[in-house]
Length: 523
Image (cartoon, rainbow, N blue to C red; front, side, top):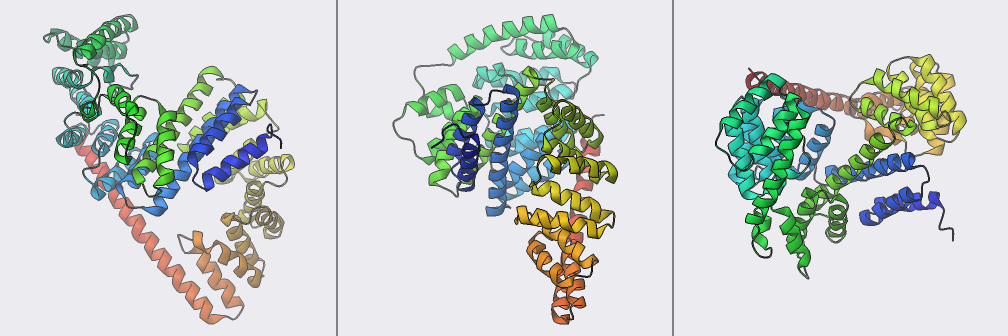
């Protein structure tokens, strides 16, 4: 009836995600972006929507199969994106405990070990991956990094040559190689050693990367040009006539994708191979489309869900990268920078970015809400109140802003002032459990136990630490319902014990990971 209605189109995309129609949702998001006259805003929203899609898939997998290698691996990938290396390593190890032969897990853990300076452990992980699949170029490249960081440039060159033998064009893709931090002096020493080695295909690749680290950009580009020529020649030498399944086994992804796409019918296993090949080629939209179609017919396919989530994250990355590259001074760029800082617990930096964005775009309620939340976290209640009041003035019906302002008053023991805002929050969004929990707490403090029970019961499912059940115990006790009070207290104590045990296990795991870093770090 109204094709130009962006609100309806966005609502339709939300429904598509909720009903697991992921391909249709992605199409709606792209149409929304194409119709936005503000390109910075379009890129930001598109990135946010792709991240929302990935988050939905992650939640779906964590609920369906929380201990599966695919769910654990995806969780570790998200932690790695946030540079939370210790937590990422722990989750990769749990994924490997669930399935030690799942492709790519050892390589992912090896890369995290590299980031932490655990060279011996990184090398062991890459070798474990290659024991499962000797043709995986990502593992050979990781091993090359480990040798390079360990001042073994000739061994690194041998690893690079192994990639050239398998799949030369893999090295021509943009990459972060080397992940490890090398000093210009170390890079210069490695350059001398690589140049002294017998000439082999791949030498120009390694030299181009080392010259870049050494700060000689001109020579780095010249070496890269020479490598590109080598790559074309080596790819032609290993091409052969036509493609076949051998190309897929050897991870020659261009030829693998070309071969699979030429076939009239693909069973689910071949669909997975094609999706992974498209992902490796950086064709994330095509990968996502195929994985979404596969998931629509096989909803329990964890592997398809994993690759769809990864492809969605990559599409989000691409949107945000375009935003920062083409519109670095836009308010959306500052908002995204603030979100990145907040994700990494750099709250002061996040506040500065959000404030810069708000100066350029003062009428965006979400910016004021984000600032209010951060100020509340820092116990800067006066500033939090000012920002949240501004957010509510701009958007009076936004449940989260109402809840946050109510929480600000509640944390300052201004219970009577908090209740109207918390009541409004649950009225506007009955599914906002945090608001029900806060309102229940406010009712307990204001001697309204009957109302407190109603709200606390609605929020009980989110109680991880036993606090809400303790409040239920207090409310039931005030109502004279001693049996129910005892049950609530027992549940509170059980949750506290579980939380303490989990926290102790987590601390032990982190301590063990820290010991591994100390044992395996750089000399």
